[in-house]
Image (cartoon, rainbow, N blue to C red; front, top):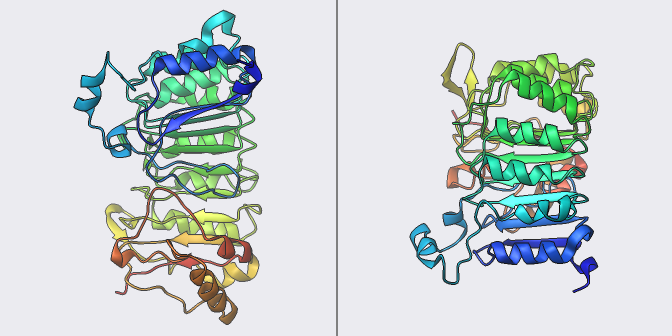
Length: 381
């Protein structure tokens, strides 16, 4: 019954085990001592491994049916009995007792809570003014409403990870919301917005406006071509970027990536050490995004390695049937062999020909990252 025992609450599970009553009981027991974290919902069946930090940059999105063997009809039939279903009011206790329970909460992670909506999430965020870390995966909430709630209630936030539950269909983010977000949340260092429709001007506003941004992940985003990259270098807002993941971005153009790499070789983005441009559909060619490029040969690999020995470029394409190694040094090849022998489930170079290409996250073998070499796959044609 000691409130200090509930300063850090983790109720996230792989199968539904927790209902509103359990959440409410633990939050009420914590009272004003809920100071560290609250994690809730159905975890992805295979969470992403750590990415450059003790915390994963992103989780792999799964809906509740994927994450458990219990069907939606089975869940519905259990309601009112031994239900383990969380509803939209599962976080209402954060606002109880004058808002004391949520007042000092620093980390809130929510996974695949099917019935959470915009109103319920906004109410929860309004009770958490001290929030530093927010992760939202698989909730049926909109980007615009969520960013408005964050900018209005969580000015201290440093890390935001948000994966759309309806990839490519959320196009509600507008200029005023972007502007308010970057003005009211200046401390963000990690931003992951996956699966949303983001035009170049929106991506540019986020990267340029968030002056402390170090990690950016826009994987599986639609609409932007990468044109925003040319305006965020040379003191344009990307000065602090260390990690950029643009994996499986349907409209990302080869020419824009090429221009970006020219800027990197010219000395811009000095702190950038990891870039992922992998794409299961290939990069879009100039003039017609439906015409795809499955090669990273336009990037001067050898020059990049010479100038930035700690740089890691990941460019995996599913049409590739072999790994281009011509521009790797002998030491690189030796390192690749050593690294691969240390990896059981996933090699440094994922073989796209046997279906192991993974678009959920940009993970990199630890040995390869520390020794800094470039990884890419090409089409045998």
